[in-house]
Image (cartoon, rainbow, N blue to C red; front, side, top):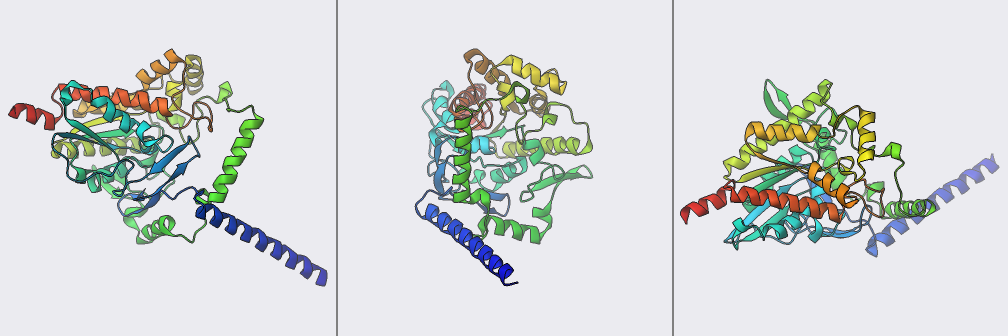
Length: 409
């Protein structure tokens, strides 16, 4: 018995030592500024939002310094009052829009601002593009962002960036596993709020504790865990000859993106998810028009849609049994045609660019080739295409603020 007691005591001492080493390591990394920063805070309307004033390096995917301004979005400090002779554009979206993987001036929102300055319809006015993108957001959260944040800045144009890879799932109370977000459902033909964030005070309290508690241990927010994870990925890369490449049979099989989006929905959950997504976009369009602003919906690209090798895309489509990869984009474009708002589909022009130049528009040196978020080139090409569409809308009188000013002159 004494032997067992000694073994148990030594095991407990060892566990305590390991725990203390982990705690000390975590504290040292945070004190020295090497910790992955906590960019997100609880938000009563959206579940979470960017934490005002947060800053730090993102090195998980890409390598960029990220700074959140005091109004809680990525970009320079901006006053609520719009300066005279200024066209202000609010961009709503998820992690593709937030763009933590690239420097602030390389995000597609920043690219839009620079490119639009050359648009004849701007005619010497200043262009301000405000990036309200937040990692993980679905369309309901983007609608809440418009209502509770973006309108305070009086935008003339609202751009909704839809990432079909997971936005449809994000909008479904049945398909989405992340519960700290607002959901909507249809009841008696009306879209109404639903889900734990609306229905349960306990769930709201749990979400608040999750994003605000400094005492919890979350491995994804742990500096030590992230450093070990980054080191292990670097070692795997080195053992596999540096940059990881796809086997041809796995091209398009990207984590977090369902193949189902490329087909018409065949079950109730997916049909409802699409119905709610379309309802949320329609609601945003109505609200933007009520504020006498212009509305543009942009469908971003999934990696396989812009894969530079058409043979790889063909193999993926053959496995799925589809003739093309444009179902989600075409469906949203049809919604815009039906409801009278502008839609820009990026997959076809960006695929043409990627194929012509033999380049990947998604992925980074520290990630799998061609997967994940847009790299700098992806942001550049996407931003320039969006700017060209906005310029066309301005020239054709689709931006009320510009049309009204032209009429007065």
